[in-house]
Image (cartoon, rainbow, N blue to C red):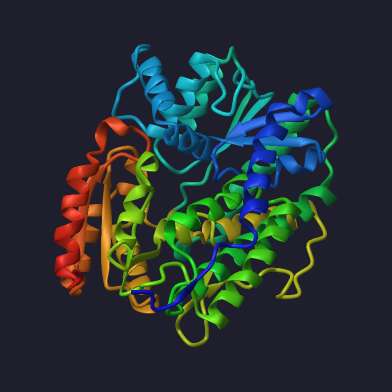
Length: 430
């Protein structure tokens, strides 16, 4: 039975073209005398933007996920890096990325495009070491890493803020030395404004999924949130998310559903097994929609508690009437904005993650939670057993399933489907 109207997103093809252009621009940057840098998706990408409009990045985690989606190439990458002595239980994204470097093959075709410098942050145990290894494997590419492991945002004191900002200032001096370019503070300020706007817009889009029926499903959202991990500091990201927000609002108004027979709503927690996203389509056969996850909402989404006590998009500096006029203004705003990110909080406390997931269960009208015991990411899986207990104690049905976000050798699709069947019976779904 179909209870609601369904419709493909009008902006879907535009999103695909924007993603393709990102990876092409990086690969071809040197043809136009541009600069290439690589680093984490959580790197302060607005800062290298001060070097010019022809600066292009390759963020490692989304690249590793793209490799994971290409299962045969992912296996080649993993075996190549493991043959060099790197352990199989390391971050799956790291192994996919470095395996691609070792093989000198770009997942989108051609040789792997070597970056001019490496620029990243360190919060997960793998981040700094990832790009240190990348530098070594690529012949000593210059590397700068900012330590952002400053604790929960509620404890983000002025002292901790200065610790981060001072590293940022050192990083700008370093960027000028390794590139030979003069830094432009106006470009930095524009990039910070863009980053705040795009990440707030993404949170607003995710909040639309509180509606019944849900206008978006999580599998679709994976293709949409990714721009915040690629170009969150660029005007193209702001423009695309603005258009997407208008379309999602229209879907809510017209009750256009992601799943036409929506009966039950679930969420997941962290990265999915990228090579097996069909598991979400399997849920939909039963009228079950995954309306999102802490990962898809909070990896790049900027949130705050609104006056009515619910989660909503964080108010941007522009909307607060804050004008950034100096380099230090921009960097302080960028640090404060970024350190409030939901996904950073549970590196320090499983209780923080449990509280955020329980909030999502309440506000997004969720019937059950699927927890991915993900061997491919130690950082975001930290404390997951405690999260399961907290959800069960709150009376929330929970399905734990084992796997790996980027290594198909550690995911059993048929076993997971069998576990899903049992979970759906528990939810009363036939």
